[in-house]
Length: 293
Image (cartoon, rainbow, N blue to C red; front, side, top):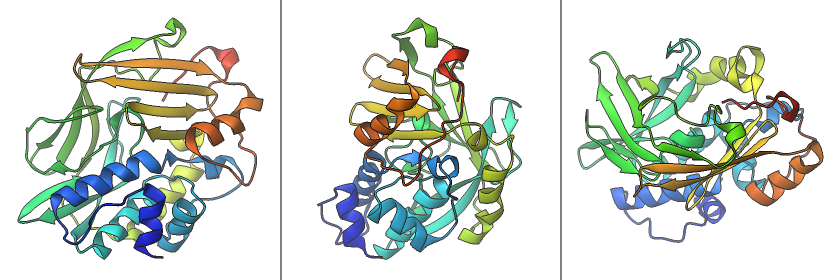
């Protein structure tokens, strides 16, 4: 593993002589614009593992994407190699199904200290709530980014990450009820504490995400990638191109279904992903006339 391979993968050509905020912001942005958030391995005859060298080979050399136990694990290594004071944290994702946070420490994030200030980094949440840049760890401060205005809230025993809703403009009315489209004015994303974690803390969540039939990742095949103007997502058979309009406080959703024989082409042309095995899409099919995430 080496940084030059990683920088080539994310297209970063800037200076990294000192571990400052400007460099962190640039690397964070380059990562989310280059490496997809995806769980396709578990739906194409492979397994995801919590192993840094395996993640490097998959995401960098094989030019795949991954989920947080791969993407953020890799990013934490990159930051340490660059000299950043980096701590892995665990978080509990908010579930709309139960209207509460999940019990599982199911998401890996990072805290980075720079000149006495703390920042939260997360290059692997994907879809509408993907951070483009680190968030300063200040309670209640609005921090605008291309996907929306994010806030970190200190609740005493834990912190909560939330995002303001954007007005959705859905081009195909058939998808007005898609769960990609925010329904609440304030979107709760996850909660976390400052308890330091190591990678092995996520061994059980990694397995549960893949083995539990109730897991979102078991129910859906997901691939998303941020673009210069928004993001792309392939969830089951539904393909979305979303354009952020921050000056209007809106997001434009262009969603359509793709046929089985289009899946491989969409992955290759829209996400630069070529799988070893055939993907078995999971999620609502076109015949069900619905989409959820």
